[in-house]
Each structure stands twice: as C-alpha cells, then as structure tokens.
Length: 108
Ligand SMILES: [Zn+2]
Image 1 (cartoon, rainbow, N blue to C red):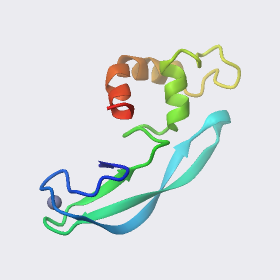
Image 2 (cartoon, rainbow, N blue to C red; image 1 turned 90 degrees about the horizontal axis):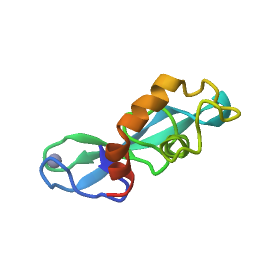
Image 3 (spheres, helix red, strand yellow; image 1 turned 135 degrees about the horizontal axis):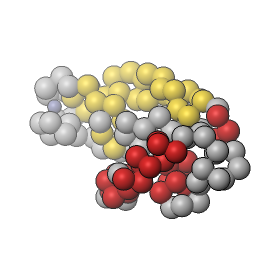
Image 4 (cartoon, rainbow, N blue to C red; image 1 turned 120 degrees about the vertical axis):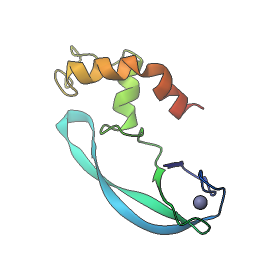
C-alpha cells in the first residue's frame, strides 16, 4: 500500500507505473456503501503491485475516513443519531484502541 502521490516502490525504491484500478466497497454515513476506485501501481523494477491509499480511506478499514475520525475525536458515539449501531460499538472501541496508529497514518 502506498500513500497518494508516492511514486516510488516501498520495497525497492523503483519507479511506480500506473497498472489498473479496482473498485473497493466503502461504508459511509447512514448505512450506505459506495464504490471507490482504488488505483494500483506496478513497480518497474521488482514488479510488485501496490494499491494507492486514497485520502478518504484508512488502510484496512471499511469505513470512510470521515466516520473513523469522527469516532476518534468523540464526535460520533453510539448515541449519535444515525450511528446507533453503525458502526457497532465493538468496531468503535477497536478504532479507539488503535487511535495513535490511525492518526499516524493520517498525519504522519
Ligand atoms: Zn519495487
């Protein structure tokens, strides 16, 4: 996985070339899901394929970043209208336990 605008391979430092894009299902507010195209890049040197992490997503999270950040900042809880059990409390607690790590991804 590479960050947006990263143009070198994290494995070997080779040049990344656009490869293709694949749809990813993302959960947003109000129990909706949306398809977001994820661009994939291929390393010209070692051939590894890397997915680009778009700004609205966290790695390995199904929810859009806005929802995750809302939970991390305490703006969204189980009592927030529209978020009663979506994401469920367990998911929110897991995010909170990963808070430092998640914020590092967002604000390195
Ligand atoms: Zn490489």
